[in-house]
Image (cartoon, rainbow, N blue to C red; front, side):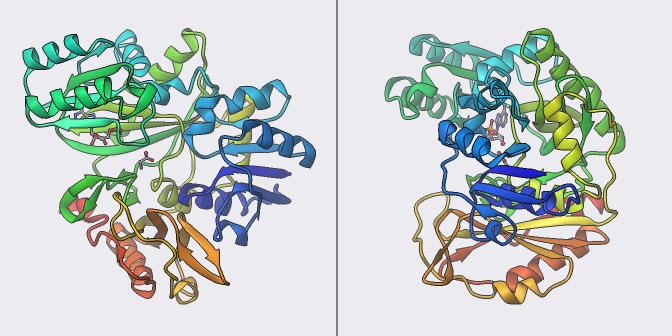
Length: 425
Ligand code: AMP
Ligand code: GLY
């Protein structure tokens, strides 16, 4: 089989790494890929939003299965384009990807099917939005409706911050067209977790639990990022909670999307807030999480390729997955200054040393090759992923890898996975 993976981050490196282990696969291409991925796949320089270029490449190369990593090509309709051309592709259609692409769409779906989430209102008018915030009071959450590169959510602890967020989004249009509408919702407190399920549009295959670390500094301080580290399994998701999430959230979401005429296939990412043992939806994403994919795929025991293919073709019959008994922890090594501005082009040392360690994989995200050296070019640069018999050992293994690797101004959190240990007592 010939497989094409679209994307070039840590999530896509993990996907390529896992797909490369399949005996069904002859060759993998990745667009655009990165230097880590280039060790396992042929990287082709086509941008993730160049749908014409990607389709032409897949047809010319005779690709049997395309796997989409990031949300942008999904919301642009890459799945519709490939399917019209008769090609197998893993991911939701443009209509189904609205679950991530429009907060208003996803909130209305949850309301229609009684899926637990924060109370909300949608506004396309600035004055009404401000009046509603003043009436509700703080804390309150303001969300730009469309995709805003992870920056469109403002958790406001006071009314003035919330009003300013609405001004920025609706008057100053800081997120452009993504802010033509806003969702204003109830603030939820609790512990966040990420839940994933493969689906072919009707049947679902849940993954193991995982947890991300969104804030840039230790103890969840500082700005929100794309994710500074993740681990699996996450003890906050007990077996009973896992079942409750599947029955009260994942199943009604997939059934609701199908009933509404846009069946959702691919992987469904549910961001959850857990309070007093009860899950509520914070948001949906139409793709694998990054960095959650790194520890999850490191733990997945079986061949992922038949599962991806079954989701793409609408014939998913499996109902449970096998996992390695080991826990996995991914520590993101980032450029100093991220999620703000940062310097690029510093050579990274220690990658060969880290590669010698057992039970450790270093996934590349924002790296490039310059004059024969690997340098940092993105905010999140590497995902150092360790495995161990339990979370504590996996944490030690990941940080053993991190200790070998360095570049100027490198930044990483030192407490990835600590929440899991606290919970276990
Ligand atoms: P999102 O871009 O929707 O993932 O939101 C980013 C982050 O904002 C989430 O991971 C939560 O930490 C936070 N957040 C979003 N909605 C709420 C809410 N209703 N209550 C509390 N925190 C929220
Ligand atoms: N880890 C957060 C995300 O993938 O959106």
